[in-house]
Image (cartoon, rainbow, N blue to C red):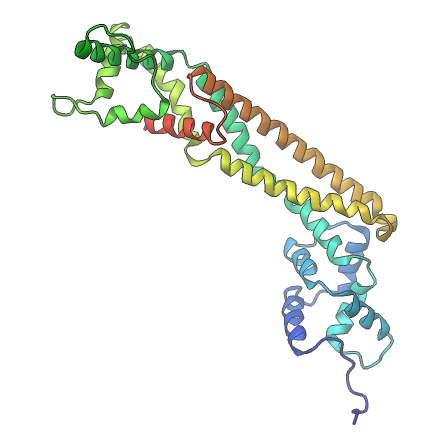
Length: 306
C-alpha cells in the first residue's frame, strides 16, 4: 500500500549513497550557482575539485528525465532537489569536463614543455661539443694503439666507439692501482694541451648540462604528449554538439582553440627536440632509426659524465 506523502525518489539505495558522497564534496554550495557556471561555461572561482565532482555525477538520460518529471513535487527528496538545477543544463557533465580541461591543460603541458626545451637545448650543446669529440678521438687512438700492439698493423682496427661504451672505460682496470682506462684517455687527450685548464673547463662545460637530462627520457615525453592529445581530442569532440550549447557555443570554440594553440606549441617544441636528438646522433656517429636511439644516447652520455 503506498504511503501517503512519501518522499519522491529517483535513485535506489546504492546510487543514493554514491551520489550523496559526491554531493558532500560540493560542501552544500548552492547548486544553482554551478548550473549558472556550466550554462555560461565560465569557471570563475569554482575549484577544480568541484568541477571533477560535476563530471563524475554522470546521470543517465532516464535519471535526468525522471527528476525533470517530478520537479513540481512538493515531497521530492533533498538529493533529487539538489540536482534539479543541473538536470536542465544540457550535457552538464560534459560542460564540467570541458571547463576542467581548460583549467588543467596548462598543468598537463607544463612538464612535457619543460622536458622538450631541456632536451633540445642540451642536445644542441652536444652537437657543438668540440672538445668532447676530441676526447672520443683519443679513445679511438688508444684503441688503435692497443690493437696494433697485439696484431701489428693488420687492417680492421677500431674506427669509432659507441657512446654507450664510454662509461665502461671506468671499469677497464690497468696494472696500476686506482687507474682505469678512463684516466689514460684523459691523460692522452690532455697531453696535447700541456695542462691547459681552460680546455678542461670547456670539456666540463660541454658535458655537465647532460646531467639535467638524467631524470627524463623521450618515452616520458611521448607519453605526456599522448595524454595531452587525448584531452584535446575529447575537447574537440564537444564542438560536434553545437546544438546543446546555444549561446555558450562561442565559449566552447574559444576553449578548444586555446587548447589547440597550446598543444601546437608543445608539438613544435617536441619536433625540435627530436631533431636535436637526430643531429646529436649524427654528430657522434650513432645509428638512427630506433625509437629509443636518443634515450640510449642520453643515458650513455650521462653515465659517462657521472
